[in-house]
Each structure stands twice: as C-alpha cells, then as structure tokens.
Image (cartoon, rainbow, N blue to C red; front, side, top):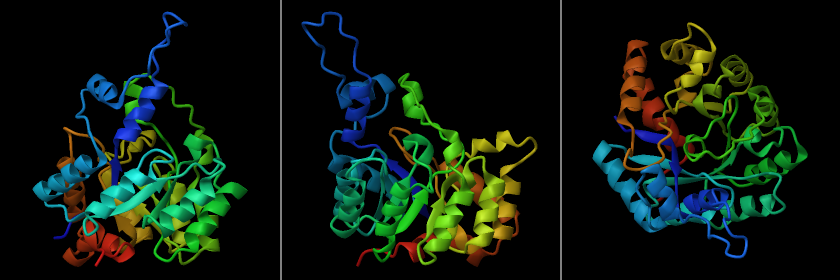
Length: 309
C-alpha cells in the first residue's frame, strides 16, 4: 500500500537560527553584546542533528522516506517567511515532496508572500495558525490570504484548530503566548462554504475541538482531517480513545477526507513509524476496506496534490 505523509515539519537552518535569536543570551556587559546562539548552537542544546543546509536536509528526508517505505510527504515551512527553504527542497525532489508554508496574516507582506509562494515557488498549501499569530479565522486579513490561495488552482488551506503547543520552544524555555480561543473549526466551515472548491485541512482531527471539527466536516465536503501526531489531545475528553476518533471521523467525513500524517520534524528521530503502525492497526480494526485504507494512507494525498511530472 502506498504511504504518503501529509504532515512533516521542515526544520531548516533558518528555523533554528530564528530560535537562536529568540534565545539570545543575556548581556553580561552591555558594552560587549553577545551574539545570539547560531542554528548549530541551538541544535547542540536540543541534542538534535544540525541540518547544516537546506539541500542536505532535503536529501536526508528523502533517504528517510526511502528507508521507511514512504512514497511522498508534505514538508511544512514551520516559520513565517521560510517559504524559500521548503521551495528549495521541493525543487530538489519534486516527485517526492509537496510544499506547505506557514503565513502570519498580520504581517504587512502576508498576501504578497502567499502570491509569490503559490505562483513562483510552486508551494501547494497555506498554513494558518490562528492561536499562534493571534488573528481570528474570520478576520479580514485571513480572508485576503485565503482569497489569494483560492485563486490559484491546486492550492489548499491548512488551519490549525484547538490546542497548540510547540515542543521545541518548550525545550528551549521560550514562551508560547498562544490564544487558544481563536482556532475553531466552525470558523473554518465559514471559509470552506465561501470557497467550496478549495480543500481545507484541519490537522490532528481538530486537536481537542473534535466535536466542532465533525460538525464542520459534516457541513462542508471540502473540509479534510489530517490524522497526524500521537493525538494526545484525546485526554481532554475522559474516556475518548483514538479508535473512537477514527470511527467517528470515518462515519462523518468518510475515508475520502482523511489524510494520514505523522507530525515528523527532527533528526535523529526521523519518521516515527510507530504512529503509522498504531493508526494502521486502528483502521484495520475498524473494518475499513483495503481500498478505503489505501485512500487514507496515500490516495487522498495524491488526489489533492498530484505528483510532479
């Protein structure tokens, strides 16, 4: 069965360099300011492998996918303004990678970045994080971003809803001042109704807003769920299991609107095969046919994001 991963973070050198600037060392002597930690410094502190270059990281992800039997993957630029890193990785291996990118709608150049990423860089999905950037989904600035994405054939819109935590920031002791009130799938449904031909992807089954995510998907057939990560948000609903989540999502959205993902991000961990094995076991246990399982684990991704060439 073809396996495609709809949710992998591309932690590039610029990503780590930005964390370094945010992690700036307090100045012992104001007359001799200390430079911020480099990307390599941050990787050493985390005990993660240094990506070194965008090209080296792209090649390493390709080798990892090959080793794990994964055919294609979505790579997410996990920092606003880092579109070029993912674009370079996609250009290097266009048949294997699909480029997603994060945008902060409050940035003055947000619409231009979306236009350039879609038209010139060939990236395929705009990623919105309302809680992180503190811009409500219904805000006019978000509407402008989505309108540009909708004007580009083949573009999707990814909207993180519900609980949001960024593990790397926690490991570095960096604050994450997220406004969790802003990520509601019901607001996503308003956008999906306005742009019915655009796929809207809600990761992690709504990350704690599962009931609302089901309602939104029931109302809008262009809303998809990605299944990524360990989905630890289920602990917010006592007694809820990942098996029950899959069964409910299959009942409401059907197998044609689920996109398998892992939330992969760094090395040496690489691609967490255990997430695939757990989800495959759940899908098999739910009595999903082989044809429908093939849609979840690969076919739906290929339909939304046809391979280059």
